[in-house]
Image (cartoon, rainbow, N blue to C red):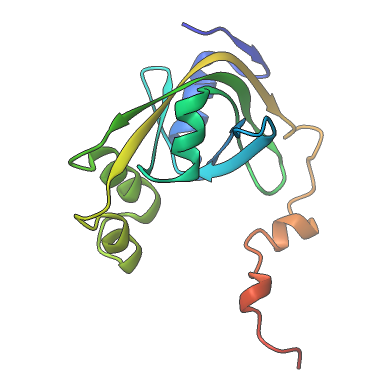
Length: 169
């Protein structure tokens, strides 16, 4: 089992990963040698992160070439905390879309939405991405950020898409 360095014990890390409803930010290499970052829904089970992606996605093609990844799961508003690390990603067919259904339940509370219908379409081939960490580092800035509950980042925790903002009044 991969050692946990940083602010939290393994039990604290497991609690955070079970409760945090933020995406995992997964970094990998693209064929040109540069870096590629994606945000995916995850579940953490048996020490590994499980995600889903379309079989024909760019991410899948990149991971087929090189499964070496880095990742970050962290809060988006103060107090900042989370886990980052590196590991190896593998791909496997998710023919029945069990992983995807679990992620839809975790992040959306069910499969009764237009997004779920789109993702669960029977013509869409799905893959399970499993990330086995080789390094884990946790951090928690709660103490140093005490009193920042009203910071602008907290007040604006859910920004509006620049593409979908209304016209200025």
